[in-house]
Amino acid sequence: MKGVILSVEAADQIQKVVREQLRRERGLQPRQARWHKKGSGGGTCDELIRWILVGNPTSGSMSVSWTLPDGSDTILIPYNSTAGAVKTLIEAHDDWSGSYTATVTGGPFPINSISVRISGFNLNSYLPTASAGTLAGGARSGVRQEIASG
Image 1 (cartoon, rainbow, N blue to C red):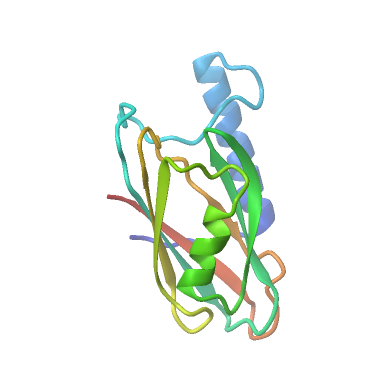
Image 2: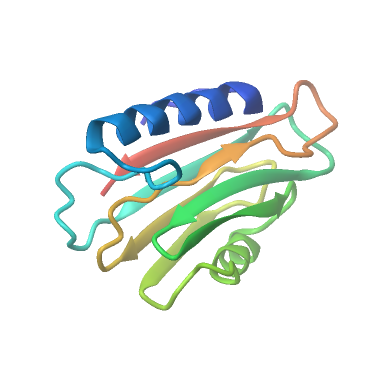
């Protein structure tokens, strides 16, 4: 897995450019483009996401923007969350349905990374985008996200 640290503005700009390109290629109307893995074929596909807090934050929350087939929203995950707390936050998300399963391991933040394995029928690899949100304290606090298909 490779990790990249992006500013919120850079991540937003990349998403905007990619979605516009997808819209053009597929002839979709604006806001219909979605992140997905080519060749997923509508079957079950697991995604492993690992979040690593950098800069040793001492307060605030990371922001995770999530788009699922049923809608999209943002989850705020506190800087000192445990794996259990992250699982609860993900599954309490308004657009989370019983057809998806989240297995969360690792933690607690900020000392250790937290990994989330998402599986579900016809998931089509909808991926979250993590950003530093309101993380503060430490040296240049932020979050690194690594994603691998499983």
